Length: 269
Image (cartoon, rainbow, N blue to C red):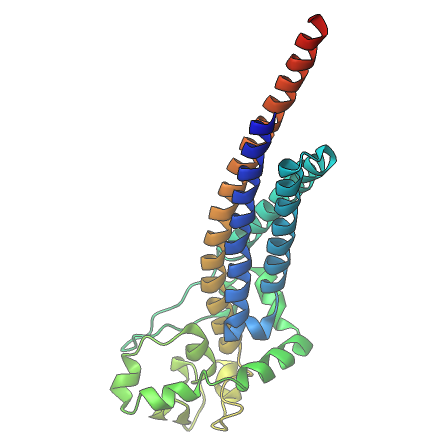
């Protein structure tokens, strides 16, 4: 029984280690400027990772000190957490399936349209109240200012692979036909294009295209890319946790069987 408990403790220690990349994925999302402004996914991931760590620690303590009720709590709680993590992985994958950039002639960067993204993501930015808070947060970052430092000539900028957020928020949409002065300063044509975003563009550095649908789309494209990266980490951690859980369950079941067999044998002696 002692050997089985040590095995279960070792397995639970692995589960404890698997919580670290989950917490790390949440912290990484929180450090990204766009995610910090939206504040949707990072905290659920961090909290879930911390709870998994605490439950795994409970299982480790229960196995090491042979506390049966802690082990039972671990098995039930970890099963619930695995289901929650699996649901989160599937949810993130489903809401990030849609949405991709569109090419424009003589441009290396892509343009983004809000309607291309999932309805759930669109609802995160369509509300004027929510967007005003996000817009204020985005305009306080150096996302657009960095473009002026990196690109001087028009052709250098047109050939640049800028981020979706920069493409949507820091410049007017290409089909508006604006004339380039620098990455965040453009001369408007006599008649604006058909897009509503054309009239929303401002050369004021705190305004730019932060009120445009293209900015909302660029933000969602950025989120999609970052959430997909985090989702991959969560998926790997989920597979590891499922494997560890099954190993712990079988080891505990084997330990109970050995204990019952030993008691049965002692009854005959």
